Structures are given as structure tokens and as C-alpha cells.
Length: 260
Image (cartoon, rainbow, N blue to C red; front, top):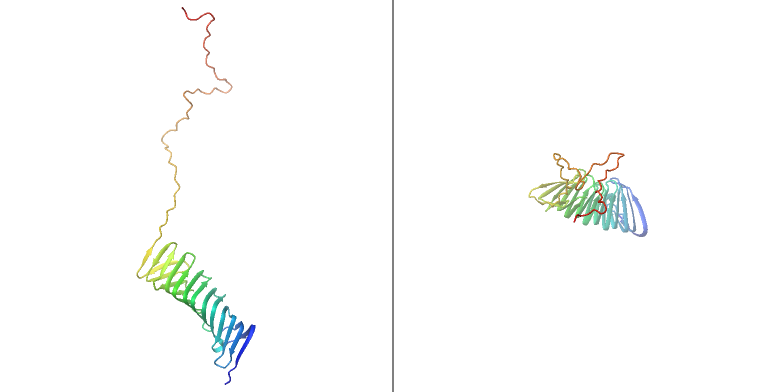
């Protein structure tokens, strides 16, 4: 058996392989190293490595393809994955992908974004079964949604059922409230939380909404007083009449005065 080994430095070398049990694969890189011996096929992509298989695109500093029909990918260095069919994006320092079983395994500080369900999953280890649509996360697990944040050491996310199970000192935070339990179950669609086992929690104080003051009710039993018109009042003259003037005092004739 003759082993063929080639070291080909290229700027953008592309190849298309058509395996029988997986989607066709297209790749490109700055540098390619290949071993073509039967049963030991192996290709290493270095520098701007780029692989497309089905609806999945993988980019990394280094990608190694191996196994029968290059079914397995070992990716290292700034790995990013985009699955347009499942609407999932993943970033990790190292990633393993099985193209036949659709199994993805990320190691190191990893972040998975489920755009379809608007959920972000972060952990030191994430595994995604693309057939069953089940994700398992371990170590420093964080789950983030619009109004919900969860922490745990172990999590199982059943994507199709929109069900999240947290164990290993789990906690959940929602709108200022904090919940802890032995096991926490979350409906990721409604964000409903269920606590099991030893349970504790803390509910944030919420200020009551201010109610606008109402004016005092009028006393309908008491007659309204007439408006004040001063110390004395007179009736207004009828239309066309002039007001009657008060009589002038009588004049005193000249020469008349006080009697002596």
C-alpha cells in the first residue's frame, strides 16, 4: 500500500468531496496538507479555513477533516459555525463535528445563539444533537432570554419542546425575582418557571402605582348659596327704564341759619 502525502501552499485552494453518507462538502484555506492512503484519509486546512457542508458553514484557524469520506471535522482557533437551516450560530475555541450523525461538540468558553427561539446558551462544554434537536451544556452554564436569566452547572435544552432543565446549583432570575431549587424547569417560550426539590426565592419589592386623587363628592342635599352682591343690593331696572336716583336733600334758603 502506498501512502501519498502532499504539502500544497496555496492562497485559496478549493475542493469538493462527495461522501455517500453525508452532505457534499466544499472547503478552502490558505494552506492544505493531505494524506490520501486508503483508510487513513486526512486533510488539514490551515489559515482562514472555510468548510461548507449542507446548510452548515464552519470557519476556523485550523480544520482537520478525517475518517471515511471525511465525515469528521476537528476545528481549532476562533471557530464559528452558522446553521441557516436550524437558525443556530455557535462560537468556540475548539469544535468537533460529525457530518453523518449531525453531532456538534464545542469545548472551552462557548456561546450558542438560537435565533429561532431567541435564546443564548453559554458554557464551557456544549453538545448539540442536530437530529434529535437536544443540547447538553456543562460547567458554568448561562442561559439568557429577554426577561429571563438562568445559571447552573448542567443543562439540557430540548429545542423542539422548548423545554429547559437545569441542575447543579441552578438559579433563575426574572424581572428582579430570584429562584433557587434542586431542579429548575423552564418553558423557553412562555418563560414559565417550575421549581423542584429544596426551593428558595427572593421576590423584588415593587412600588404600587400611584392612583390619581379624586375630588370630594358634592353635597347634593344642600342648596347652593346665591352669589354675594355686597352689603345691599337692588333689583336691576326693567328694559328701557333708567335707574331711579336717590332724592336730593332740601336746599336751605339764604339768610336762614341757626337761631340765636
